[in-house]
Length: 520
Image (cartoon, rainbow, N blue to C red):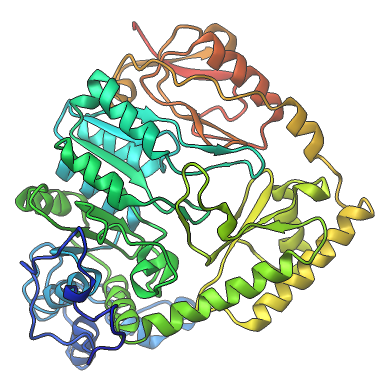
């Protein structure tokens, strides 16, 4: 059964630059199947004399059992032969992964139970050797830095486009990336380029043309597509990274489709990733006691998308479009849509990510988040200086939209009457421009593994940072481990420690001191 012509159950009809070869897929499997869930149902009546200790819930603490329910505890099993084994799958897990590969257009798919961070770690370590160079945006997720530390690689940073009005980073402009690859000597020798697509705010780039340029230079394209697993299932959404030709793609199935938290996938295609190496790193980084609740949720999320994806994702898009339109009718609020596309760093938009800009109310996004949660009982996805971000899922309803709109109108009134202090203008007038990307004297691995000491911030000039420092705003890291602390960086940090709404990364969040590498 082909549930949605053009977005077929197998990869063949979705093939583009990243044409799948079906090396690890079984054409006899139906996307209506759920092999892991079927195996769990079959295992229910087995007498359990093995881990876990609660024995299908019979020995669980009653309070915990009442929270989770007997049905969930029955499915909390371990990798006994009847249930397959994630490190060396040969039964239901292998079948479920083959079905996912077929649906998403990969040659091989791994089910990842330690979050998209685990998928990113496996992807990067599969691609890089100790000492290799990798080109990455400055605003990467911290899991990418962790992977680079584990690999012993040299990061080469490219600054993304920054939208001054909205106050957040977009993608890396293609011309900037190609110029960097052509002119930076280390970038010319880089093994791979890793891009974040989509951004947290839903903006995306045309990866097809970028991928061709990267492959032409003999490099891998790795993609952090944590927020884009749903792109495969609706024509209104941006082009998926696999279809654009990426060599490896990490996806968070719990973020945008129906899997449980931590349930993610790693997709691989093409000849550039060594499969034996990828498998070895996956085994190194993955628990030998994988949660079957997480694995079953990946199996179910894949099946749900295969059978009902366009309908469900279409529902989410309709809700998001309704919300966006209604928000733009509330004076003082702004919700960008497809008009953002075409500017540098943005080729397309995921409409299910709804960014509500509150700056014209004179308040910060952080204040708006707190008000909506504490006064209206609404929790948004995240906030920054100018915005709050909400994600529309097929699990949301029209009632959710009405509640949020009611909350936003109450937010506007509270700001107008001074119930929420207007802090934004004072902050905006004093936030300095980003300093230049610092010189990197050591690889991040050497910096974090070396002997470190703590020094006062005003005595750190010329020292080598041993930690990440990210200020909010703008949410772009100012220092990475291994980078030299310049006067421009020091002046920026000295200013931001008085202004920032949040400091992430350093042990001393007040920025009174910094950890630096000794004897460098």
